[in-house]
Amino acid sequence: MNTHTLPPASHPYLSGAAKGHLIDGRMVPSRSGRTFPTFNPATGERIADLAEGSSEDVERAVLSAREAFEGPWKAFTPYQRQALLVRIHDLIDRNFDELALLETLDMGAPLSRTKAFRPFLLQAALYYASQAVNTAGETLPNSLPGHFTTMTIKAPVGIIGGIIPWNGPLISQWWILGGALATGCTVVLKPAEDASLSVLRMVELLYEAGLPEGVVNVVTGYGAEAGDALARHPDVDRIAFTGSTETGRKIIEASTTNIKRLQLELGGKSPDIVFADADLDLAVPGAAMAVFNNSGQVCYAGSRLFVQRRIQAEFVERLAAFGKTLRVGNGLDPTVNLGPLISQKQLDRVLGYIDVATQEGASLAAGGNRLQGDLANGYFVEPTIFSGVGNGMRIAREEVFGPVVSVIPFDDAEDALRMANDTIYGLGGAVWTRDVSTALRMANGIKSGTVWVNCYGVVDPSVGFGGIRMSGYGNKGGPHHVDAFLYQKNVYINQG
View (tube, helix red, strand yellow):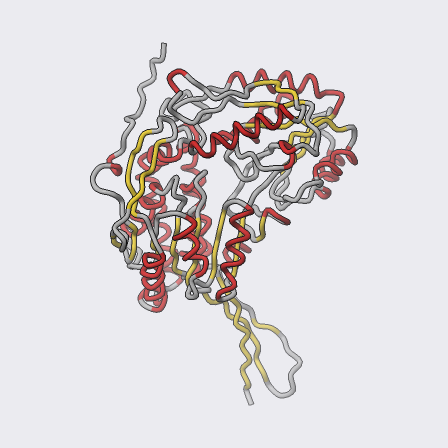
């Protein structure tokens, strides 16, 4: 019998009329008057209507951002930007439970996950606050004849277009907001049509903290129209995008209108490598949650699980046993570990890959089904494990973005590296071993932007992560990330 008291399946923010765009600090409807629905993926129920943005709405938002960039925001000192970010930190802390519940209702992640974001978001806000007063150029020696002083100055790039994914907007928006607010840029955000609510509410909190009008704007709508218009806009100076590699290509093409700077975090098919000497009590749950976390809807999910051949049978057995301990269901239940997939479209995609894996000869070791009964109206799939997978199978090469792991055997370190790097992607990777030499060899040998050793998926905003190859380019987090919101001026002063 379940004795837990569930939070309400509603939210004060969802009441009333359709949510508009946030432009110039105010919520406004689309110029067209069109709206579109957003659904709770745990129940399939419509929970709100959102303004459907067009190129006209993007134009309004970009104009607002440009006026703010050239206006009052330009006069903010580093200390004032830092103080603003500290106030934002305090508002996030006070309103965090509301934000976590809104995220759970909108994109399905369990409260156990969304509530766990609190320390990360608070740390991120303070990290970026520290960077607001930590940006500096330098004085450089020169070999010019006469008397010259040469220096560099760091200046804000301008307007940042941020296109946010649906798999974790509460955190994802801060990879854009943090750097922009720290450096003095302005922003136009286009959240994913499947999960926009926590972005709208977060930006409202920014204005409550004292953000000048127009510094951050939000245009909701579909990627093909609003997202494309933002990527192509000639007065947007930089685009930060997280999403599929296919859409990333379109962003790159669109950016040529004015040669925008780009930061792209794209698809992944990350290798997670377990050696026979690994601590299996640590590696089994670590490898499982590397792919099952957020129901597999994580860009760097460790969905290619390479296990040394002599422990493969034991590892798969223990992995399947661990999967059975995970409770899948409505994220409002505090005992739930895994929520639904984001949409019917994503559900069909994941179930399609499960069928393909079976047809290609992979062995289904656990899961593989859509959940029925009380969860039949939601988009739920069991944690799924395939063993006996070949590295050339589609299930091992293409991004599933669901709770599906492919277990691939290997013989030795050379074999593991060869297969791990046989991919078009390069976002993340991990190794589980007690041997320091093996750990270092794999960390150096895995071709990816981030490597974890005896852990998976941990990210610190002051360090960050990023990808290579078809997983994109540009770091999120750390001083290099902040520097990407700035451009360098080289200054020559003739002293006569």
